Amino acid sequence: MELTPRKKKILAAVIEEYIRTAEPVGSKAIAAKGNLGCSPATIRNELAELVSRGYLEQPHTSAGRVPTPLGYRMYVNELMETQDLSDEEVAEIAERLSGPLPPDQLMSDAGRIASQLTNYPALTITARPAATIRRFDLIYLDANSFIIVLLLSTDAVKNKLVRLPVSVDQTMIQKLSTLFNAHFTGISENAITPGMIHAAERAAEDNLGITAVIAAFAIETLTDSEQTQAYLVGETQLLNQPEFRDPDKAHRLMRYLTEGGHLADLPLEEMHGDNELRVLIGPENVAEELKDSSVIIATYDAGDNMRGIIGVVGPTRMDYSRVAAKLSYIAAGLSKRLGGGSSMPPPGLDNKLIIKGEDFDEREIKEEENEG
Picture 1 (cartoon, rainbow, N blue to C red):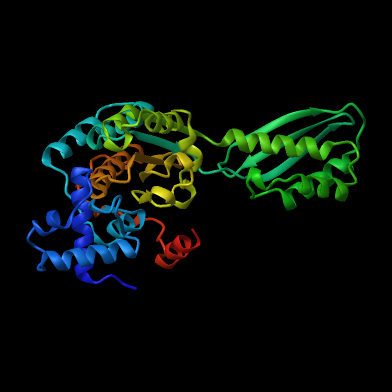
Picture 2 (picture 1 turned 90 degrees about the vertical axis):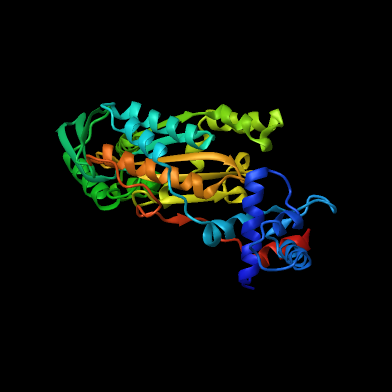
């Protein structure tokens, strides 16, 4: 059931107050805002309804309410207002991204800026799109040797001399060349399975293991063609957040980030455009270490057919609008510098910004509660 405008307004007020104070929010605090147009009794009733529908929760019977992941998702998708950067923030970002820095230092500095402006750990990543093999050329030299030549989708050419302990005729090499061009081109390394290799061996009547040698070189080449650089800064910023006053909880998350787990669990493959923003709230994150945190990541054009990600990790009680504005502007600035532009973009959330995230299903939450 759709929330009424009044419920949405009260939900937004609770979330914004909780973001500001990190304390459960009571009906008196909401009523004190004076712009809801309803009595304290009505506010209490609406808060109770928001709790029953899973948008808020009440830690204790006498306590105020705090947002749930469902409430934060509603807030991010529909309720939060965009924020503009201050003139000082715009000037600082523009100055620090405009210097004559090499790309790796620029990425590190961009992460440091994001961490300092948001007070959260920040990471920057660049990744070249996964290459595929466009063509296989197997060049027969003599009965005991041939050359594998691979033309990649990036126009790179890789080759390897193979020496065989047994003799092979040219017909076998030609047959393998045909098979590999028919079935192993245009696919990722993960798609080259043992089953495919065995099928090619049977089709070529290869009892010498030559098929496996060619496939192994193809997989090795595709693996080496992946280029990813990552920088993490400001991980100790977590200790400044009330949610991470528990040292064990903070250290678990800090260890996860510093050990590189952030690379495998970010939805990089789902983000295709430049300056696209994605918000992952609590249980929307794949990694168990991030289930009590939120992650905001923005894409940028890293140049040379590479795409970059800049993001921050913090508590679910983060100021999503403020962080989104800063990351959006930093990402746009990186695109200008690394993607061939010459000047910083105008600030604001209108730089092709798309906020994405998983929508919770209210019915599923109720079903889970009933099952529990």
